[in-house]
Image (cartoon, rainbow, N blue to C red; front, side, top):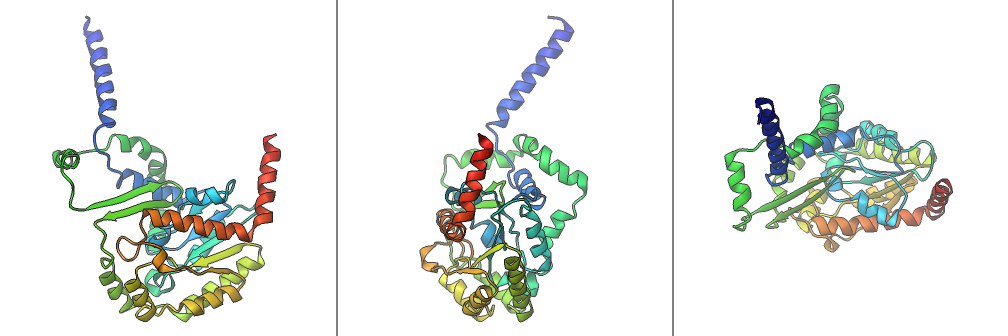
Length: 319
């Protein structure tokens, strides 16, 4: 074999080996998939029928794919962020994700104590993603799917990865990023008191304030007057977390539900005991699927004629 032939053979062999190893070796999902996830959420196109808003309890608690089982043909985006506040900045951003050419148009609000305090009014994560340099955004959107398969690894990571197949881990956390804005989450072992200390610390300084409620109710009224259907609910938490938010966080569910309804929105009452959390604050994967179906079913009941009309138009275009 010639020298040139040896080089070509070596390159071909190395390429095949590299690609083969990419299917076997561990991947860094928290780096490449998470970065791509937040970029796609932030810069999602403005063609959605339903936009979900709120904080981590919403992006870990409502699956657009599950909701579509009840609402086929509709485009749904989970537009919630970590420590996401429900205020003018996010109201404008979410509304821009809605389609402007057809109906239905629906905003779903997941209302937690944190979303209505000064603690989250800065919407730091959303603004961080929004203000990233253009080159970095493009890399996350288009290169990360490839880079993920060739994630950098260390000997320590290899030991942990292959040992975990032989030895049961003491703890395990599931964090599966779905590119429609939902993070499928679970944690083992379950500890429903885990999140309480951080919330106690937050609520010692920040509570639900009337100015945030007024802004919320005014926005619901504007959306309703503009033909946007607004649905709101309180994400399920542990009983201890519920009591903490009601007391220290000053979350008055009856008052908020009344304000949403008077503004023209629809309030969905939930029973906490129907769902399970893994840390007291976020529901687990099976409960998220259950809640997604229930919220979607309620939305469907509010727009049967509009939804049927949308499906008929879709059928006509496909002929």
